Length: 519
Image 1 (cartoon, rainbow, N blue to C red):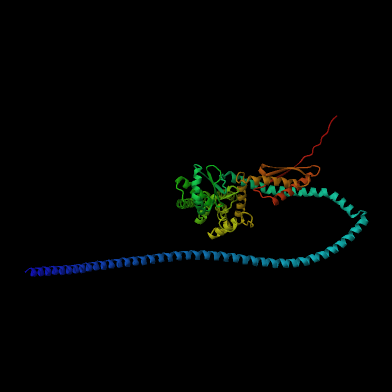
Image 2: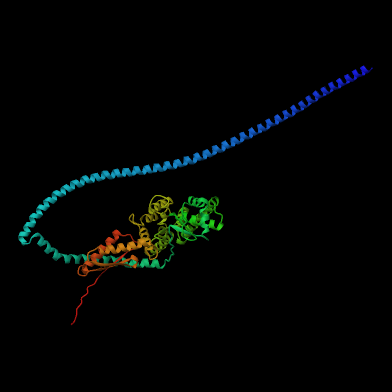
């Protein structure tokens, strides 16, 4: 009984153990299955994430490739444009060089032919000279025998007798011609000029190649320079001017030969100082605003000038060029004010002479239009003015007046002559122009030096701001008749060697003093 119970217990224990082992393995299998299922799900999720990441990376890659291609295309287009412009410039320079070479070749050929002709003429002239010298010698020998005078004695006798008569006749002739010319021209010229000047009063403003910007304090200089100079470099590169920051208290100098560019830079700096935020991006923003503001001012100034001159139908581009003349000066005279003066005076003189007033005023207003371009394009202001006048269909009379106003070509119309005269009147009136003090003093010294270089001159004095020179001559060397000739020769030498506005009066003074003493 005990054995059977024991066996039953053992069997039960074994059965329980087997059942536990079976349950253990079944549980392990179930957990493995659940784990494998979870691992499979995680693997699929990882694959999906990787797939999405690869898809997004591929999409980003395509976008970056497209952007890179667009940037490359843009750079290539700009490069092609620049290459094309440079190629055009090179071709233009080549054409000019070819034309100059052809012109030089023609001149060389012409000079060679002239040299050949000249050599033959020289040879012929030398032969004739030898014949004439021989004939002359035989005649002199005969004259010496007949007169009883040697060659030198006869020459001295003739010169002594004829010198006084020739000087007198020459002086009288010069005085007669000058008097006749003055009588014919002075009265009419004075009436027209004085009437025009009386009715024309125009302000003038002197500009220079620099502008000064006032600062609230010297600390602002450092802010404008910026960290490691980045602000001032940005300002100079964007505006195209030179900024001079020196020891001058509370001031910055803006330097540029382009007056429009200088004005834009000045406005930009003033706005930056007012705004207080000075950094490269803000500089660019303020520069664009200032540029638009100056362009608007130029347009309005041109329209106002056309309105003041009373000239209609001028092309909009020429109106803009007129506005730019506000920022140009010539010897300190504002070119726009000068053009308006010329327009007014030309119109008044045309009315006095019965010429077309509107055409005269139009030609006077546009005569210096090329000065708005001569610092941007190649060529003189006359050539540029003629080119633009033709481009915008101006009248032939106006174009000719522009071309002839400095005497480069002969004036063939009354309008052209009027523009020439009024241009000289506006430039030469007192106060219209100013010049550098060193150049002014140098001109006065040259004027006195030219005057004293002639024989018989004792002293000379430049007066009336260089518009008159008074010359004291030695009475025993220079006679009254010689004074006329001397004045003419000095005037001619001044014209050849000096540059000056208007005219210079040469005033010669000859004084004889005789003293006697009663004892």
